[in-house]
Length: 573
Image (cartoon, rainbow, N blue to C red; front, side, top):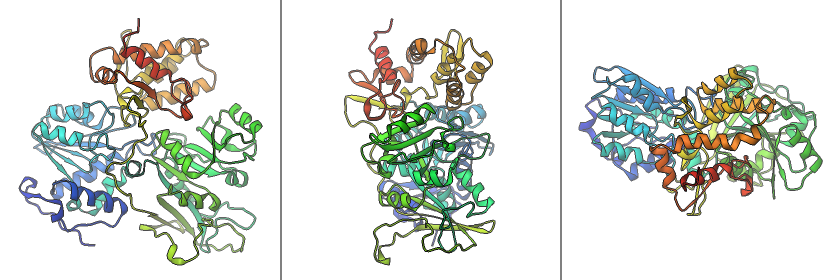
């Protein structure tokens, strides 16, 4: 592969058109994304030192991975004319943007300098704090590793910075393959989401050298080494959810946790059409992490009642397939899924095109057995020419094992990628901060003041009030939580354990309304965004919240949307 070397003359003197670059890349990320950007716009080459800053930004953006729930990973480096470097990173959804952090750290010393972003600004739709911070910082150039994949963000920040008179340069193949790969891998889940309107699916399995994932008896502990399992635990901590089938639960009784006391614990999803599942399964303990059981409508009502009583979320589908589960996960705002299932579920997952990446651990052992299970069930292929090619594969040794990873397909077109939001023009939907209309959600990074006390987000306020008069220490922990995600985790755990105020069900709507008034009452981006929805219905499109959101199949009460419309329409006392 021929990657053209980077010239060292100043970038402004080297404005180049995309088709003038000889560099191409072999991965599906580069093949789809970079090739498309070359066709669509004029790009700028960057210097070798600038490429190194982009690489650092991509690395910095990955810092929160495994520690917080997956979100668009963004970082900002401000480099002054004297080469001082000021840094910021988006820690979690709803936290202060990387750009705002870096500008504050610079304290005016970045004037005349350059900003380096691994990802175009876009942490909260409807809010331009990141762009305004860059403009107000006095930097004269901005080098961006990648335009934002989501259509409601893509190109907006770039245009706004250019309109403010800033030189904006978007990296392409001239930065070198390692930099380009790092920039894309920092947000490959987000890129897949934009391309396919589905979370990125990773199929993981461990097998012997003769291709078996277990003995004929079904025993599989352990195929791979301890070192390989540590990588699996870390991978779990980097995704939104881990998915298995009912057979895995019956045979292995897995916990599907990260085996860590701190950091992000993924949601655990079990797919079972019959709900023929053991009642003593480890995953029914929801004190560690959320468990969802996906099944077919009307299946095994007694088991459904048992699971619901254990705190497990049961979701019914008319016909259970990997495709509908992936679609449901998209509606929950998930960016990535880890399929840790056997061959019987892996095959339909691949056939449904919900698996995009494969992670295979090959152990130096042989177990044999004509009926021993293999990692992939029947795909219906009869000729080797039908085999699915694995693209951009890499391998490395992990202890005694070999770990191979690769992609099953190209990303496809990002232009005009579909959205999970309602197609109805008269409905304004929102859920995650980075989704369209994200400024309306309780996790958006907009501090509120209630009775002289400042809370980082509405979520901080709401969760802290659950504990008012019950545990002031815990309420303070919620108020001072580093992110709304952490605040919600503390408050929800206390509610599951019955450690919240006794009148909470009677007052929670009033508490929420107080927080919403504090956010949307004063003039600012939040209020302007709310008023812009006049004449339309507002829906919090959470598929799992039937009180504040619309719930699965729009059967929820949508109290959050109703309160927002009440405030917007001026009917609040």
